[in-house]
Image (cartoon, rainbow, N blue to C red; front, top):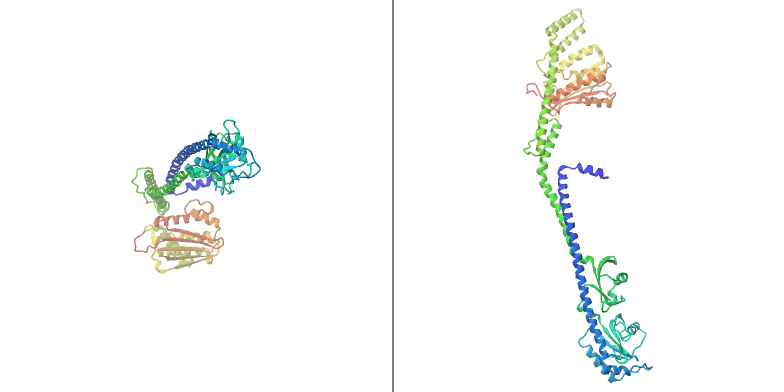
Length: 597
């Protein structure tokens, strides 16, 4: 269906439905525009507030982490100011081949010192001081930590040595000196150098637990902490799946604080803050679905409001449109009645709007039509009556009757009884037609007139013309317009039989409250095209050619019946080529002695 067809069908809908549709569209468009503007501003504000909040939160986390690292860095410097610790490390300055453990007094002295550093700090897994010979002094027992370095080629050892005395932040790793190989920590470490000679005496390493971040990081947020090389510090690797998508963007875009990105099929707001002190990065990833959760609720609410608006608009449109279209329906019904021929129909409308003006104009128009129709009918009747009177006035009826009677007596005297019968029938025809005292006669009188006419025609055609009647006796006193049936018999003889042998059948029957007069001839009939043209001529006078006399007779009879009895009565025609011709007249029952129509 193209747009033009859809538009045409839309315009063809009932006026009331179009009115309701306009109401609904106005409400829906208004709700969509206002809702769209509200949704856009609310979503923008929500994103801006979420961004500001997350930037502040990441900065606070970074600040707290830097402050803690400074504390750990201070602790890592403390061995440099304790001569006893330095002396013990000097005793283990030279690597030895044996795997002997340090004396108990050294281990106790170191344990006390380290324990004083770790007091009330549960987030510290352990503090380890590693001498050059591989000896490990720690606050942990021998069931937890090896007391000798096993592998001196660890990457984290290389990183500490490369710092050359500066403190180092080590990302998550699994130190091999723990007996439990699954132990994972991040650390702050540095080389221990003798202050006076700057000689390398060992390493101090503070292993930290991730529980440290529970104090200032909520587990509900996707927060990650990386070192300056983008190595993970927090959380554990099995909890940082999104980092595989985020790290490439961190490497490509170093100088940004806020970024919108798509990861794993979902949109995220990424906020980062890198410390100038430690180089560590704090990254926060928040799904936009979470940020816009309230906005999405607003969207659902707006959708419900729009749906309710549509429903309310339909209800209001249905209620409010009824009085608006009632006058239109009233005018439409009146037009339909006038179209059926009821010219007495008028529209009662007390409104003064456009519909009221249309109703008033319709009433004026119907008044004019009714007046014109009445004038046309009355003028036609007066013209016909004038013609009949003119014919009647041209000859004295008594003279005609006396002359015909003289001819009749002469025929009888000469023994020409056929001529006598024809003259007698002709006299009856003249008396019936010239007598204009009544326009409505009984069926019996009309039949006598027809029989006289048929007698004359049979004198002319002989046995070629057969005539038969089938009439219920109770219908002989039914009233009908004068000279209604004779033209039908005449048409049957002239146009139906066309001078050939044939039969004319007249039947009168009662059907409900109607009288049906049927005139049938078994003549040549007519084609469907000619029959359709003749039926059309009953309503439009367009008879031409050889059908002029035949059609005008039928049209006149049909108009007389409709004029006298109404548009619901009249004439029906049926015919088939070679199958004869049938005329059916319908008019209401009105017996002699009853009130005339």
